[in-house]
Length: 568
Image (cartoon, rainbow, N blue to C red; front, side, top):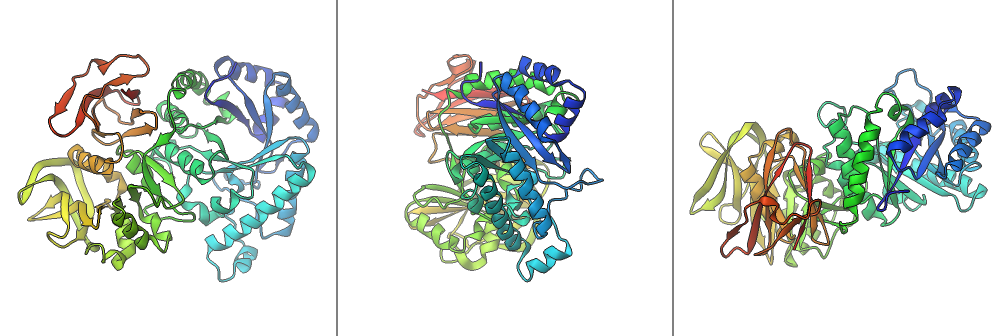
């Protein structure tokens, strides 16, 4: 018996295999997992941090799972032995001896398995004297991406010489904005490896070092799926620094992104320190499998992120937590009528011309203040809008123009430091502003150009302060950003929206308190159906606004909960 809409795998690292075999508890551990989870595959690691399992041991482990009817694949983690657990020391790819060792590990593993996945420690962070000398005058990203492309071709060749049909998988880590700084380059490596895998770990979004927002688990899966559709085999996450809610959210988002396979890392932790996660995951996986088949293909606001780009690091996660449904792509979506660009788009040297072309074609382009600042005067032919060096500390906000003033005034829960955006009166309009002492500062600007509209969204100095923008301000942004979509929502921050192309959608709350959400469907007399219960209108009050062609529903969400709905 297996799940209908995805498969699941358990990752056994080399330490796990060593302990389980030594203590003779393979059967006991497997029984625990299989009691709760429909396991289709296991990944068995041959090498990690100088722990190297013998061929005899690996074959015994493989045979154990084969007898259970479980598919078995190999795995490698390319780390050296370290005395400090957080001192992740990669192989030095400038050292011929270490390159030789890596090829030997790959050849050894390929001799046992027909499929190998490289854990995301495959990166390089070595800055030894040899690396410094080899790098020369190149930047670290240029040096490391070129070197890792070379190493990747080498090890794939080694594996293919032994087994021409072997499936070589590279797993990419969750810190996508920084990949190139440690040698990862999906644009090149996707053509070298047979398949790739996506790290959807977000863990705690405030107290861990990476500070990755929950929505990233969905965003990064969709980004890698867009690179080479069909080659992204699945998503994988772990239990580190996770509350139970955070662990379940990682699972939810991996499934919402339509992962073909979901890998739980790792057996040793899941069977001991985090054993409570296994029965919880089993329950959640059943529910997700029941719902996943009813969802179409993910869709949303096209969000262009070029390869090897960075800027406003990991901002997409924050924007997704505001209820903007993002559809990331490494290629500029020339024909899209709707587009969102963060500072990372500056990597494309022709981005200003592409924005202008989209506007001339009647498109709606939303750019962040970070991209505006990076482009400086390159957009001046479209509009005289500039990100200045001045700052404003604001707590009062206003939106919705009324004559020469504003209609709606709201307070945030804290003072927010934002950059001041300069613009020219009556050439550009303020859709939302922050107000301080006898002055106001744009939060959302609108400029008409040719047949299109350019919007500038002001990002606070601390992007986490986006969550403190009042709901009324966020609602203006959501409505403007969703005109080409079937619906938008009105709600406070930290509630995400996931859209699918068969008129289904998911609303997920990441808030710590209960929340009421208004769903604004972009047509009159629309009926919502909750897929989990088939209850029409969910006991909510149907409201209509005359002349606006909209239907509004109110739904209620508890902390960490979600609703799956369809439009009829």
